[in-house]
Length: 146
Image (cartoon, rainbow, N blue to C red; front, side, top):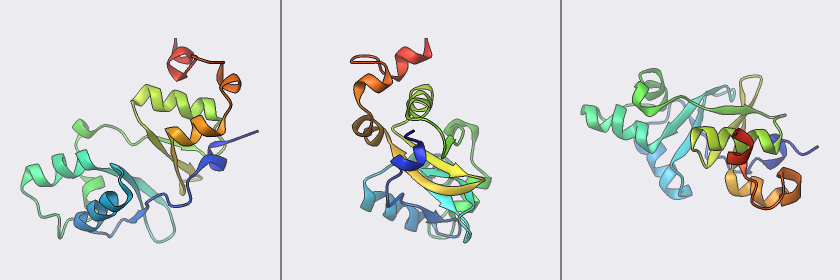
């Protein structure tokens, strides 16, 4: 059976919890993404740093992105940014799509036992799973939430 672990991209864009927000933002720009997972040195997953969280919890508060780290941001993140959403590596493609639809995400972090496995993007799931396996043509994750 195909799982979230099987769909993970090779370069998840992970950053270190000790990276400054300038380093994180540079990585996001280079990868053309708006969210990257942050980990410690042992790949323990801290949370996702998003463009929105950098703006809300650093820049809009007048804090310095050259000294504030990903860990600083994640520990002080406001409720306005929303929860970190992740799925377990053994999750089915259908479960991944349902979580993406529920939280209006185009990518999800995949973890196993608190450790980062990688990131799975919506397109990765759609291309990997034939339409019939997820409810046939026209039946996306939204149909499964009803």
